Length: 620
Image (cartoon, rainbow, N blue to C red; front, side, top):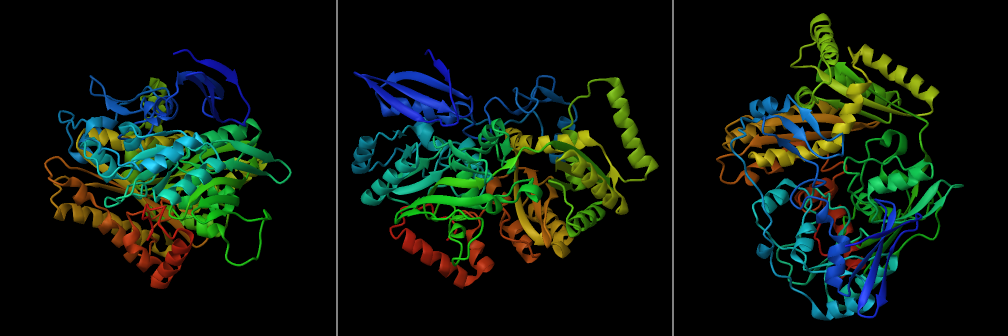
């Protein structure tokens, strides 16, 4: 197939030109910065396969890009493949860490395959389908398109896919190209009583994208990926009006071309969408400078069954009753589809610098972060890893390029462990990222390192800090490697007051180990955490755990996070800091916001969507 390419501006889009019995489909992709003209037969199914099949470049049963993965090569060495993230790296320590930590063996593999014939046949609403065709909005009911949008990235979802087990999946995928297309789709869904589930980047880890198994109506996945334009940039007010389907990496790249950024960088920013950030109340790692999503949003446009919800004024603050934006933010696709968002933007930072600090133990590291928060001098990002996560990060260190580099690493280790007396089994590391004008960054850096020194912290270099943040985008790929060798793992998060941080971290990790032992897991699990965000009154804590499930009849049930979440709540933690509730955690919603609070949310849902068109059943 030949492709004719043209340069394009920010105002990209999708059109189809009829030529007799043929058509030319033109797609403007924000990813490559080119207009690609693809001749195809006048068939919506063919069109959707050519243009909208994300599974051509992304894994259908795992995280991220298809060409990026961890594997053990023929020599038994761990590698990270592909050209992204500094791909092609050899990781000489990972194999030993993997086998010793989990008791895993490279001789035992658990492969995964997708059998399209096993996917349930679509239950289509023919009247809806006929009316949809008349709008010209692309759609597909091919098995691969439907399966790809039937799940997020919870462990149980990916595990089921690898096992070839498919529950309820969407019957149809629709790709609106603009706000008006969404209005048409929602109107048709209301007219024909079709269930809609919005789909942005597909990175949910709360079961929010799972189809309710007992839903008898036709389920339509409303994929917003084609709504990826920056509609305008207002340089006087430093705002940008953006379609909600754009993913984070494209948003930042396009803004950077004009000298701006949002600074909003969740760990999933490569794939998660602006609309998804709004719908889940997302948080970015640099929120200390740029704020969380609720701090960045100026205006939201949402389509719901009752009509379009938006404010008439885009002033920086208003006092006109409860903020309507806060009905939308965190609604998780239960009220409607976010189509356009006006967000704050900032000039790109003049200077960026990484750093790291090693502490004798986790307790002193937490005390340092508390003091940094108290003095309100936190850098753009500051994260504290416990010892288990430090050991894990060390196992991911690439092969050194020279004997001299290896010698220097040895000297650093000797200085920290022998000369300074740090116990390698107790020390922990904080990674730092500073942004701003150069003079302020250097002043800020000195202030943070001075505080760290008061708590026994030693500067550990820029390279370790930069590598730590690079691993943010790579670490999700490790779960897929584990599942190839009968190791399952998951992450979860919470927010907690400062005076409960240490107790919560200790008790949750101990609960995980105890639960695994009582449920027959033979090898001790990995249970680790990091303090990943700091606030005046508390912190966000992120947990990882994993174990070897070989020989267990129902590993996903054993893994179930209910015990860990109960322990979090018992220790003063929240139901979620930024992942959201979805269906995974809604059991605890009454406990979290009270029965009256649940009643308030239900009242909004019943008014906005009386026929439950947006029937994902998240939150409530």
